[in-house]
Amino acid sequence: MHRDDDQAFVVLGRAGGGISAAVLDIDGAERERLTLAEADLGEWVRAFERAHSPRWVWNDTPRWYAALLGSGVRVSRCHDLRLSHAILRDSTLTPGFVAHGDATAGSPTDWDCPPFTGEDAPAPALFDLDGAAAAAGPAIGTDECLDEFRRQRDAVSRSADSGRLRLLIAAEAAGALIAVELQAAGLPWDVGEHRRILDEVLGERPASGGAPRRMEDAARRVREALGDPTVNLDSQQKLLRSLHRAGILVTSTSRWELAEYRHPAIEPLLEYKKLSRLLTANGWAWLTEWVRDGRFRPTYVPAGVVTGRWASAGGGALQIPRQLRTAVRADPGWRLVVADVAQLEPRVLAAMSGDAALADAARGADLYAGIVAAGAVPSRAEAKVAMLGAMYGATTGASGLLVPRLRRTFPRAMALVDDAARTGEQGGVVSTWLGRTSPPPSARWRDAQSRAGDAEASGADESRARRWARDRGRFTRNFVVQGTAAEWASAWLADLRGRLAALPAVAPARTAPRSGPVFADRAHLAFFLHDEVMVHTPQEHADEVAEAVQQAAAAAGRLLFGGFPIDFPLEVRVSADAGKD
DNA sequence: GGAAGGTGCGCG
DNA sequence: AAAGCGCGCACCTTCC
Image 1 (tube, rainbow, N blue to C red):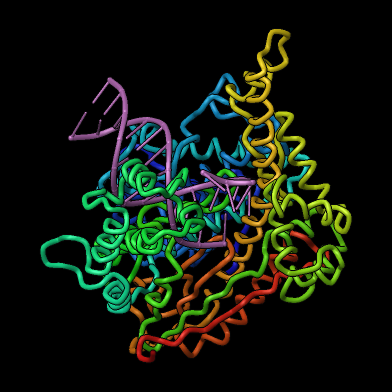
Image 2 (tube, rainbow, N blue to C red; image 1 turned 180 degrees about the vertical axis):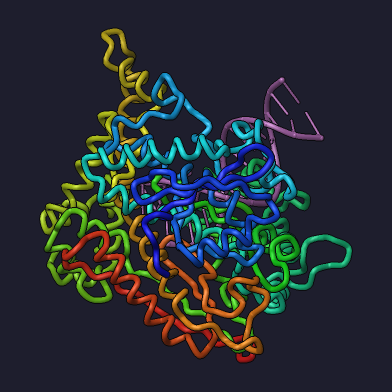
């Protein structure tokens, strides 16, 4: 795992009819340029990685790394130009960073584009997008990539806080690698258990293709109670009218509002909605479409959310209902180590604001109990609702009422989110701990604000401007906390990935081949969701993995917040394997 | 027949 | 119709 400074970076891109690799030293000076046939890329990367462990620089991680992983080649580090570009373009730490070849700052370039998903181009055309690159994704020529890489390095080194930006960019790149690896390894999914749940909850699936038995049954009871034998329960408008005719004067068909009424139609209707959700979101069709060979392989989209959180595409990976969690099951002889962080966002808020009182309250496993102990509010339930209200910007109701009490007890933490809200309301931008900056307000938003200031502004103009200002304030208030929590989570994942890679492989007889060539013989990440990870591991390494997950959390805390005394306690569970129940 | 918007609900 | 942030997806309706 040594690295020599003469081969610190390799920029990969297209040139001529093949692929060219620019080898750079630690100062970014080019030492060598190689031309490779596409078919030789995997073997060359494997050898170069083993010899030099460089940071691989490429336009867009999924475009390159999915194919490499598929041929069994893993890399330890990369620099994702597209993701870094998005950070540097908006960050207030790099005000001079303007898109390449772009006369007017802010107008989109090749680098401002969604990630490659494999869907906009057939697999054989993976590296075959020469001239069409702009439409389908970021620039792909080696020279263009090298150019952009140097501009990004310059911008970071000139920045007011290059240390934080380097951390952010490295964490983002690690996340990009991990996202591809998560999809390649997949989440072990027990199809039999999933089907058992469907049969039990929904009832048997009729051969004719109609709704399953229990759903039909619930629907029939609703129609009877409403005296409306044909009403379509899936049509919000028709259902609403039918409810009104039956004297149920709801203003929506949401479950929380329906639950407030007493009528024989309510119970079966709530039942119908619950079953219908399971059927349409995660029913038999979902299983057929998304689970192959015992693995659920969604596409993860790092920084797919403005705050830097990950999004997902396909299969609703980030919305797997708790109801189905028992279908997530390790291969025989393997275990799933499932870890989640307790109250990540308020802990991050304590650290980034340097609020020692909130950090004290966060000592131990339950931050909300600590808030009660600090005397801010009487009960845990109130502590939770107040803290969420403070981070989301609640102004009314129980939550809004409690927030001022937090302000008295934790003035520094509350000042940070209140300042972020004020800045947003005034049209400004805010930044996370590591320097990801929120997008500026839209032209529509600014127009609305300036129109409200005109002498002839109507009352409607003014109230709309105020409402939009408050909406934006709640967005920026939450941005700083949610975004910094995402940074912590990326650091956690990245550190954990390194620790897992250091664990030994298992013997061929003990492998999990469905996890793919790179991960079949070792512990690997299998799922990630904001503040939760799952690691699929040979059973004999489960204890070490559990320990690694803990150590990675502690390391992430130190990496972001140095010596500031803040805990990130995890709940860690080790599952049984498919052989037990 | 498809795009766009609304509604509702799953996750954090 | 959430009060109070961020998403993705399915379904219905409207419009072209």
